[in-house]
Length: 395
Image (cartoon, rainbow, N blue to C red; front, side, top):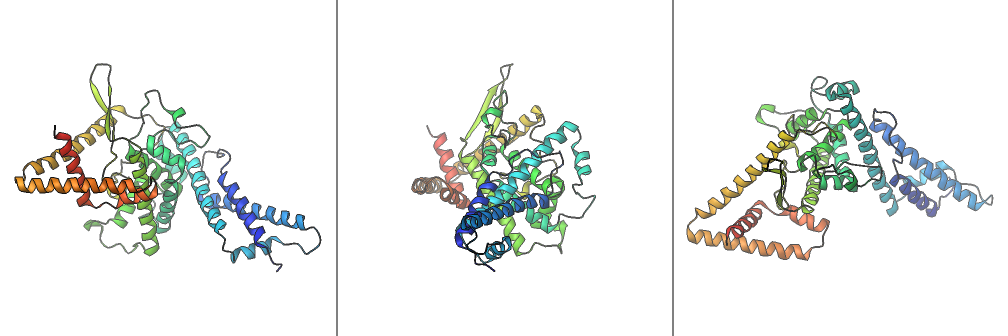
């Protein structure tokens, strides 16, 4: 085997990374999305082509003075290479795969809605549910977790989770896609559910069945019994990474929003709640679209379908009432305390608040601050809520 210089391999990694960052460079052809295997083959083709071009450039520059390097030589050298730029290429490939999958699934979702029967089209496509299998395969769950963990870090998905406007890969901005009312068509939990819906379809399952299957696997109830098809350590790690990535994405979206109830006035003069947003909250399964809060009707069928406004308003009003009831219950609990106990809890709450502000001010905006917010324990969260509520009611 002819020795392969590091400069050739580095040239390959850089060229492949640049090409992967541009993938996909065109809209998907046909309305049936490519399989994940086919998507991966497309990425492999890009990498092989980049390697061929790097080898050809190197040989052309060297001329005929020495024996040329073959593609096989370069491939063998790659097996034993350990360059930092290789990790950059791997990250680019991971993001390229998710972009291609999301773009294809978004196109199919829009097509399905136009057909008028989502269930029939899902069955025609061969997406599996309880009529086909007893549960979602462990490999498919691992696949879904990996795709979702990467997807929530894509800038276009981060924007979608933050403001709820249509996901676009064609260069248009989210602001350009805002509807006439200026309102997001989906609530924040529904946006995360929609990403789940697309990626569960990509791994071959109907969303409601897949999420029920995962819930039974990772959060089994007494009625589920002991499942012999239990998750191994690798799957547990993938699922944990999925939950952490989803929680971090939800925190990013929450930090970008103000803690407020936005209201609009109807033509008859009445006021209705159109969205509920919280920037300080406990990140639970329900808040981030986690498995513990999934029901069969929790997944929106399509981002582009017409929202049922009355149902949405009832759901959002119910969320607002629930939040208000929880806050009032916490205040009532503090009021019911003996004066000495109340003074102590309020002092502790103030200390927690000041400590929280001091710590946050020390941390730069970004991942480090997000990790800190995510690590706050439930007792501290309760004290922070008490301080905020008590200060709000004090003249």
